Amino acid sequence: MKLLQGKIALVTGASKGIGRAIALQYAAQGANVAFTYLSSIEKGLALVAELEAFGVKAIGYRSDASDYKAAEQLVENVLADFGTIDILVNNAGITKDGLLMRMSEEQWDTVIQVNLKSVFNLTKAALKTFMKNKAGSIINITSVVGISGNAGQANYSASKAGVIGFTKSVALEIGSRNIRSNAIAPGFIETEMTAELNPEVVKGWTDNIPLKRAGKADDVANAAVFLGSDLSTYISGQVLQVDGGMLT
Image (cartoon, rainbow, N blue to C red; front, side, top):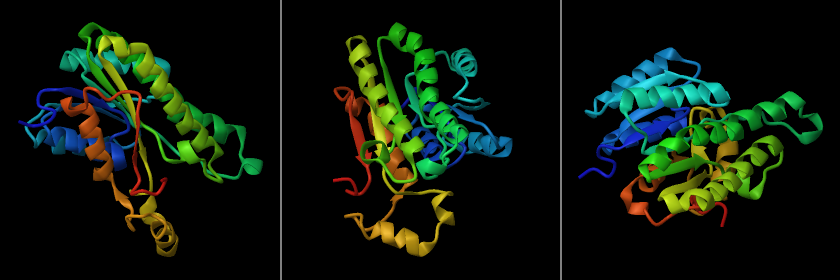
């Protein structure tokens, strides 16, 4: 029996990186997958084909999770196409790094809007369905820098710390309805973005990780499978660090 057999999952920002890995792992574990993408239609269509190869239903929606009305419409569309939602993975996120002295208001506002407001938008939009079902798993992708902070990432760190506070508050509000809310805090994960970094810079980071390597997107996806499955039915309000022991 697959861990997510027959469940309906909505994953935001799934056209690449961690979101894509989560969508693929979910499909491999038997979940029907609705996902969002924003920029590349080609990548969205390609992911649909990959997910369907696992024998599940998959639909990609071009939608901006940071837009409140768009998030409401997205959930309506998913409910019309799939009937319900069992798992919500809030993964959409961006970075606009820079030292605070040089950070523009636009850099601050955009990161907060995409990384934090999108989590509010989608969670609120999906909440009626979870309340009706008296079940549901909300999984928010935060970051270890939301716990520790990071120089040059005041906006990103603030947004990810906000996700943690939001996650815990939601867990307290809706736990009595059998709805769980958890967060995953990845550390240094190899993605398309990190592939562009200087190898010496990457080595400097990985040398300071107890497991002596960067994480894979699948490492985060495996944690998302666990939190979306019935293996974690008594876990809520938690932040699961997937960081190789980096923040210990």
